[in-house]
Length: 153
Image (cartoon, rainbow, N blue to C red; front, side, top):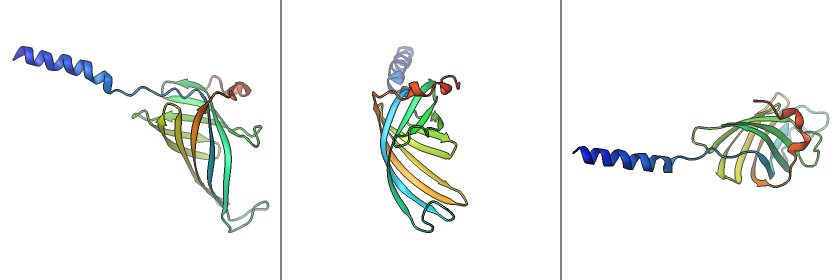
């Protein structure tokens, strides 16, 4: 009986690490063409009470990671000078992601080490917005343009 218990314990000790999922390496640049819709209630620059459908190319430039926490910038590729700081965290399953910048929160899922889907949704008194993008990890290095975020953790 003792040998069987010992065998089960050894088998479990060998199998459990194989079931663990590693924390994804988020550092790098993730690029996507996102799409969504905006609606403005009050605006001097946008149509009012009309949905505005959009497609935009973004890069999520992650330049620092500490365990499951990471930071970087969202880069609107059409206007790279407008690149808000973004903070993120990876969930306990190592697949779920939550992000925040000054406009709101985002959430998503890691599909693979080089692909994630990010969703956005926010509402103000003036505007409603919802969008989604599939981001691919790329070799382009935007993070060197944003040294102010290198030590957020």
